[in-house]
Length: 519
Image (tube, rainbow, N blue to C red; front, side, top):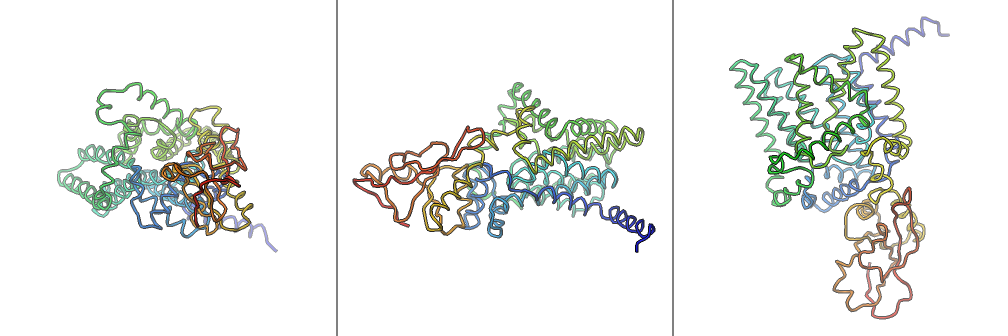
């Protein structure tokens, strides 16, 4: 039988394991929040596009396909590879973001340990895991989670290089920045911050160290360019570079001082941070960043500079603010929040415990809602901020609701037999999503069915027929100019009935000149 001493011995061992393996336990907690109900929220419009591109790039060998829309392809390759391994394409794609979020958590831990201590690193990890904004994008097959990881690791390698002057860390910095730009152009902001900090930090070094410092920074740049050479030699990359103007202001617009846009960006940043990073992390995080700069401590102050300079650049160049664009620049606020809370706890332990307890309870509740009831989470968020993305993810045409029910319905009526599933010649939901879910299906064959492809055929025909059943899936009631050949058989409404997906079949018993589609 166990005695009280045995019980306390077990408790002591558990406490020792927790103390000795904090990062491992944080990683387990992270994965438990990111992997559970990972596909409960249906496939989002941009997720469908990226997963479709990724599968095509890997399966066809057209590795730079996404450049036609101005998107770098590296993350698409990961999406394509995981789809070849994992049956559920949405789970496969979102798993990639979960992995990058784990890298962000590890990077935050290592960076915080180097700049502060393990107690603050533990708090930082807990804040990151329970932060709703981070939780949401770590569970989406989008680029934001990977960019957050790039930002954290860029600063970590810069800190290590500054502390040691070992060129190996400069090499790692260059690799990180190169891979980051290979994923998304957002990494250029991190590169600008590196250059800015390089100049500031050089003024605090001896001449011999200053030379090593700039040689290392230059080496980082050359390594990044070397990583990017396969991308830079693509003609399509340079042809599509101007497409970045959809999201960022060009130099002439910035010089014209667009104060209205900047004011809107600042309002958006504050609103997104306050409601989605959560009020307490926002307030503590920005206060901490500013106070670090004010203290002018050599080892820590440039964390505050990094945070505020990155956000300043984002505010200046961004055309339209959204939670997606802001998210990669906010993880560092978990560090400064934890640091401020430690200062409060040291001077006023009771107040520190109260703030941490209330904040964590609120974050855990919000995270629980996001994992188990994402619709309610987004709906509640919509009531307090215009940046909730409720319409995009739930009720608008960009939402993935009704995609799988439509495919399940076709599976049911075809009874496992072969059939064509046609969609409009477009990207997004449901078009790209249909290809994503049917790319490896040998029974339901996705095809484009659009007037743009049938213009020469339509002039002389009255009917279209197929040697196997043919179904068309529409975005709302958009028929791609083929409506005279189709009749609706089923419609699936999305939440709030603002958008829907229709299922059509070729008109039966059609008479006249007929065009036949063969399998």
